[in-house]
Length: 247
Image (cartoon, rainbow, N blue to C red; front, side, top):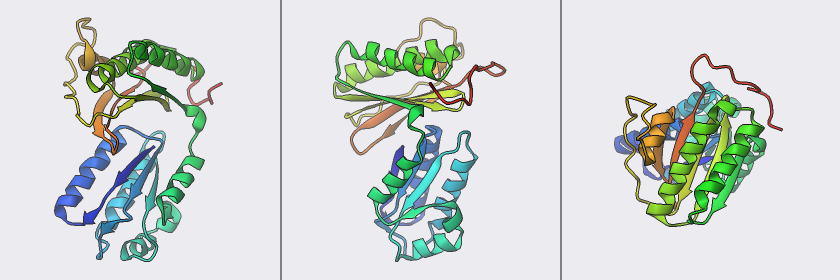
């Protein structure tokens, strides 16, 4: 689940910043996206179409991304969202605890594994074990090797460069896997371009991640940052157990 907070006066600059951040959020393909506009200064409700568009983008993804909004009920923005169809399409909540509770109640908890790790030499091995458990539970054997490589490199990067507590989240995204590694260091690493050859064995670190991941990126968080990657089966590959609940 990702939370995006927009505050300050709504203008062209903030519109561009929000649009870019939304694109990054959806690239991570979270199970849910909470849009916190409680402290947004938008007396003209000009931002309403952005939030409604976010809901439609989330609905079009496979699997869909649940989108909810935290907005005071007595504001012009809330009123316009209601007129645009939010009552049917986009859940609105007056506070973040309400929004979080509603989003969490709809999440398929069996499609997510989380581990909190200390920045030690043992952390990558523990993370690989988490991936092994996920691939076995979700019947995704073809993703086992690349997912273990990715999580190992991401956790090792966090251990070596952040040196803070680490949270590893493995989530199922249809027939694919989303891997997110969060730490408390706000410095974003440079994510290299995807190598031309995915079979080159000399890739290490984040280059190795890009060589096998379908897509990967970084994102700042209130506490630090998240480095993430999505892995999907090769085109035409049959995935055993796809669409079936994990054991």
